[in-house]
Amino acid sequence: MLLFTPGPTPVLEDVRFSMSQPTIHHRTPEFEAIFADIREKLKNIFQTKEVLMIASSGTGAMEASVINFTQKKALTINAGKFGERFGKICQAQGIDYTELKYEWHTPVSVNDVIKALEDEKDIDAIFIQICESAGGLRHPVEEIAKAVKTLGRDIMIVADGITAVGVEPIDTSDIDVLISGSQKAFMLPPGLSMLGLNEGAIKRLESYDKGYYLNLKSELKKQQANTTAYTAATTLIIGLGTMLNKIESIGVEKLYHDTKMRAQATKKALQAIGLDIYPSTPAPAMTTIAFEKADELRKILKSKYSVNIAGGQDHLKGKIFRINHMGLIETYEASWVVNAIELALADMGVRTFDGKANLIFNKEIFREDV
Ligand SMILES: *Cc1c(COP(=O)(O)O)cnc(C)c1O
Image (cartoon, rainbow, N blue to C red):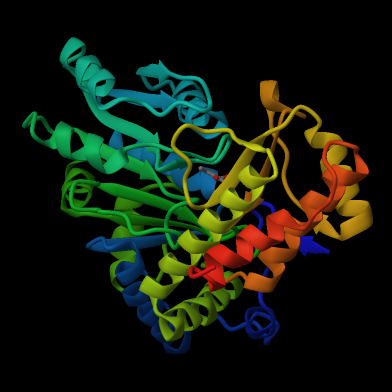
C-alpha cells in the first residue's frame, strides 16, 4: 500500500534500521554527541538561531509555544483544524486570545492581522500555520511577520511549520518561533516535536518562565548543553539523525525543488482530468481536491489500486481529498497515484480513462519539451 497521506508519511528503510539498534542511555557522552550533531543540522534546516527537540507530537510544541510566548494576549488565525487548535489551547490554558476566522480555502490577509493588532494593544503573540493542513492552504506568514515587525511592538510571531519545514524554503528573518513535528516532512514515526527559536523568542524566554514539562526556558538551557530536561526520545532522535544525513546528501535545495515539482505536476495532472483544487493559495506540502464523492474515490483507491490518501475533517468530511508531497518521495510512486485516481474516476463512471493524468504528470516532470 502506498502511504500518501499528508502525515503520517512513510518511514524509509535505513531510518527504520537505525532505530532498531539497542537503546542507549540518554545521559552519556555517546548520546550527547549525536544530539549536538543533530542540533546543528536542524538549525540549518530551520534557519533559526536555536532549536529544541521535545518528546511529544506536534501539538505538544504548539501548546509549549502558547504557554511560553504569550505574556498578555494571543492572536490566533483559524482557517482550519490546526489554526482552531491554537485557540483551543489558549482556552485550556486560560490564556486570553482573539481569533481571526476564515473559510478553510481562504488565507488570512495581512491587513486583517494589522487591524486586529491596532485594535488590541495587549496582543503580544501571533499563532499561525504556514501551511494549514486541513485544506492544504498556504498563509502569507512571511509577509505578515514582516508587517508586524514594522509596528515596533514586541509581538512574537509563532509559525506552525509542521507541513512546511523541510518542504519549502521559509524566510525566517521575521519569524520568532518555528514549529515542526516528526511524522510529516521528516518521515519519522510520530512522537517528536521540534521548535526553531530566533533572537526575539530566546529573549522572551529569559524574562518569562512558564510550564513544567513544556517549560522552554529550562529546556533551552539543557539543550544548549546537548542534553534534555527530561528523558530524550532517543530512538526518534537517532532516526532523525539518519534522515537529516539523507537530506544533506541530497541537498535541501534539491529536496525543496523536487517537492515543488511533484506538487505542481500532481495539481496540473488532476486539473487536466477535470478536478478542482480546493484552496485558493495551495501549499506545496499537499494537493487538496474538492470532490463531492471523495470517500467513494478513496475507498476504491485503497482496495483496488493500493493507494492511501487522506480525506477531509469536520464540514469537509467526504468533500475533499488530500495527497501528500512531503518527504523523499519516489516520482514513480507519485505518478502511480495520479494514474490510480484517473482509473478510480473511470470506475465511478465520472470520466472515461485515457491516461491523461499520467501523461500530464510526466510531461511536467520529465518532458518540458513535449
Ligand atoms: C500534523 C499537524 C500538526 C500536529 O499534529 P499532531 O497530531 O499533534 O502531530 C499541527 N499543525 C499542522 C499544520 C499539522 O499538519
